Length: 119
Image (cartoon, rainbow, N blue to C red; front, side, top):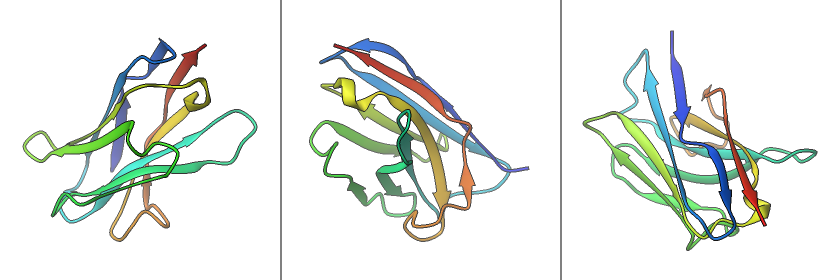
């Protein structure tokens, strides 16, 4: 059974930092693209960032560019999202996702981890 397990969410003040982790299990993701989406209350789920597990290339949503960094540790089979200079509008449930192309239609989703940023 394939699972994506997220951790690292929490409550932080504006300007603070958090690091999310996503560890997959059940199959190899070495040839996949993995990344993060988020969904704020009353809003649609939106793309945040993605990384190619094979070559490490990255891509970010404009709203987080320069503040968030996605990275991977192939030895630990883990993807990270370092979030700096957090804003109240970053408050959302963050989901890890994976597919073989560009996360246009993820094949796998995590259960989500809550991030709350207070002003």
